[in-house]
Image 1 (cartoon, rainbow, N blue to C red):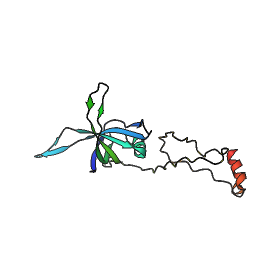
Image 2 (cartoon, rainbow, N blue to C red; image 1 turned 90 degrees about the vertical axis):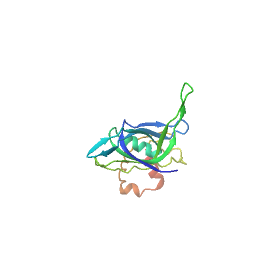
Image 3 (cartoon, rainbow, N blue to C red; image 1 turned 45 degrees about the horizontal axis):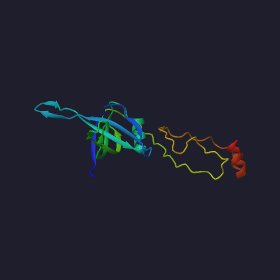
Length: 172
C-alpha cells in the first residue's frame, strides 16, 4: 500500500473505542487540511478538506491521551475503505486514513514527550497464594499512560532472606 502524509488541525477531541470483536483500542478523529495559494501578491484560502483518521492499539491510546481540538498534527498512513450499511439498509461510503504514526506539529507549539511503558502480558502464577504485583486483570483495558512509579527500595535485610521468607513478606 502507498503511504500518505497529512498535516492539519484536529477538528474535535479524539474518541476512544474498543472494537466489538477483539476489544482492541481504536481512536477516531478528524483533521482539517487548510490550503492556500498565491494569486499575485495575495494569499487566497481554499476551502478546508476534512479527513477521518483511525488508529489502533497503543497508538490509539496515546493519540487519545495526547491530542486535543485545534492542535496541528501530522498523520502518516494508508487510505482504507470505511464503508458500512446504516440502519435503513443504505450503503454509506467513507474513506479514512488508517494511521501508522501520528505526531504533533511543532510550527506553533512546543512538545514534551514521555515514553510509555509497554504492557507486559499477564502470566499465570504457579502458586495461587501469591498475588500479582499490580492490579491489572487479563482482558481489562487501561488508558493510563503515566509511567509506572518506581517501587520502594528493598531493605538490605529483606534482600538477604530466603526465598520463602520473601514470598511471605510480599503476601503479607
